[in-house]
Amino acid sequence: MRAAVFERPGEMQVKDIPLQPCGPGDLILAVHACGICGGDIRNFSTGLRYGIASQVMGHEFTGTVVEMGTEVTGFNVGDRIALAPDVSCGTCWYCRQGLINLCENHRMVGTNWPGGFAEFVHLDAEILAHGFVHHLPEGVGLTEGCLSEPASSVIAAQERVGIGAGSSVLILGDGPIGCLHIEVARANGASQIFISGRSRLAAAQQFGPDLMLDYEKDDVVAAVRARTEGRGVDFAICANASVQSQQIAIEAVRKRGKVVLFGGVPKNNPMTSLDSNMIHYNEIEIIGTFSYQKRHHLAALEAIRKSTIHPEAYFTKTVGLEDIVEGFVAAKNREALKVLVKP
Ligand SMILES: [Zn+2]
Ligand SMILES: [Zn+2]
Image (spheres, helix red, strand yellow):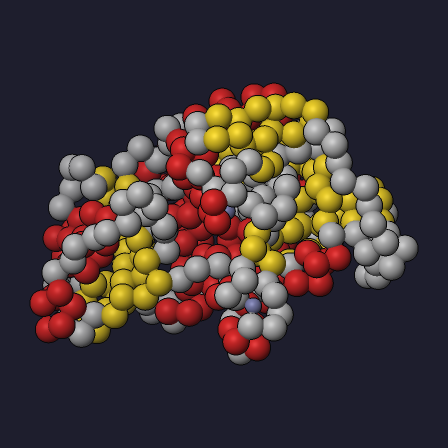
């Protein structure tokens, strides 16, 4: 099969590789499409997690079952599947608490197993047992389903920090994750949604934020305070890979406000400095969020079905597998909101 293989930082080769045969407990999916994630872009330049040298990346994909082992139940050839990449062990302390996103033996399709930048994906029994392999609901297209994975983590983050009716929210970052935070916050009942960004604000506008701020031209903190009776917002979500955003977030939240660290920062430069007196005197909470539970992936598929999330507005560029590097460049240069690869 054809696959885009990450070889080393900055290098990806599209080539023929063998597809592992379908064992009795396994499934083979024909990939319909796979989104390029911010994490893929980061890994492309700095390398895969866990020191893995080479792999087929891609974890935001959907596909159709084309082959199935004799022991597999609950699926049929022809079924339309949306997948999320995390695979937990089921036995560690966190898994036993139900916190599978924090599994001590956390692994991912697209990192530990070959992922979706390929014609086919082999899903073994372990992925089927401890991963996220869900049927697409009736009425959700295969292309639309590709947004379910990033949407899951946004839904999980907002649930964890308690964004709800009447909340005021500042989102820092105008990429696909920032836009998803607008849609999910709106669905959760937030009354004021502000977004700060730069090159993709025009695209973010279609999701209906109450105020858009250009972080190079506007005083984000002053603008947000002016709209919240001088207090600041209830929640500031850092939805980009920028340590500067984290300090702006602390200045923009009200007393007892919550700062959400959603986006990972470059792994070669993860240190940040924040005004700890502001955190202390204002009783600010700083909360990290990562990944999600199964119910969040199902909720994301349902949000797409009910059109509280609009995938078609995110997929502003589609490339074939042979042109995947062009897709990575467009995503990295923020020329597109979400780039889809169709093998
Ligand atoms: Zn992703
Ligand atoms: Zn575990």
